[in-house]
Image (tube, rainbow, N blue to C red; front, top):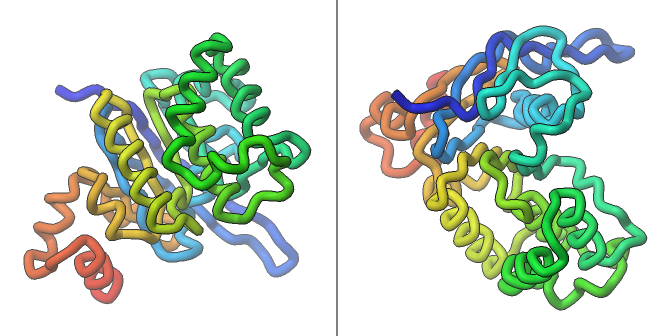
Length: 248
């Protein structure tokens, strides 16, 4: 029986505004087995980023229980982040640090020695354009470079669970291939991945599980093979997903 890396049970979250209440998540329940690479799919506004912000302890759910690597997630407690890496929609980079300083600071916070930090940073950044700008202030970075840096920060401490929100956005072809290579390698080392992305062609190369959100509810949670079994004529994940949206 497989161990569960991430378990979400009955998670709900609503937002209030001048126009009323928006139910961003409603009774969201799913599991991600340890060692799986799970794609998190859904149209814009489905609740994907809200869910990831809850997993990162940035937002507090209105209801529900979450277990991360076998431990209950508690609001305001951050010790579990030593074993989890996050890339959020809001990158939250330190504009007046250089890219190198941001990476070195994160490495110290994660407990890497100076020698480990140097070796890890050099290996991670080498295939990416941001490697040419590590000694510049982050405020001078392009949008693509910022996203590369945020992606590398999430991987820096080799987390057991990696949660990424649109990691492929604004990446050029070279950076995309480098990112996928890194994710494949991290997955092969036993890590669990949860990746939200509209780049279904890239998710298809990585994922063996899917969670599909629609209007704040889980519409599918299971293996990629099971998802395709519902749509036997589909030739690709993107084709299957578009067909599912039309039928759903």
